[in-house]
Image 1 (cartoon, helix red, strand yellow):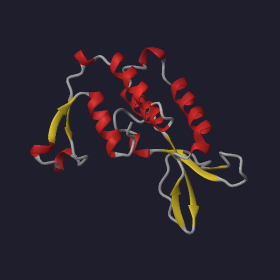
Image 2 (spheres, helix red, strand yellow):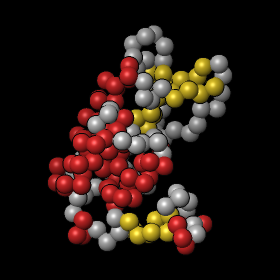
Image 3 (cartoon, rainbow, N blue to C red):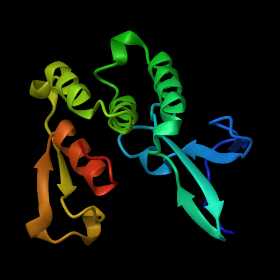
Image 4 (cartoon, rainbow, N blue to C red):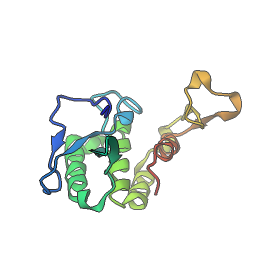
Length: 160
């Protein structure tokens, strides 16, 4: 069963919830390079299984909340405190993981309270999610990072 391409060194099969069955765990690749370099990117945890010959996304099942809390802790430990509110790659993965944990509104408030909007000139963004080169002029907008992030999150199923 084709499950997809994963980033990293392997070790994707883990019995995350201790039920005797291994799940496939990796990170959401769409976050890598989206807002920063690979090294400065964080990505939320995703969890899959195969049932009846089909890939099933288990990421948001409550039984995996401890795994998400652990992953969030790992993401937070990787960023230097001084870079926490300037590292766009970190913030994107951090906020997505907070959304999965049901803490999206609080995390969004924390981001908006700490983001330096005055030094953010914004970036041209296609509001449909298409590549800039393929975007109609009507769908192009200059958005500051928090708005671009919120749009990206919504387009990829991370809403709060």
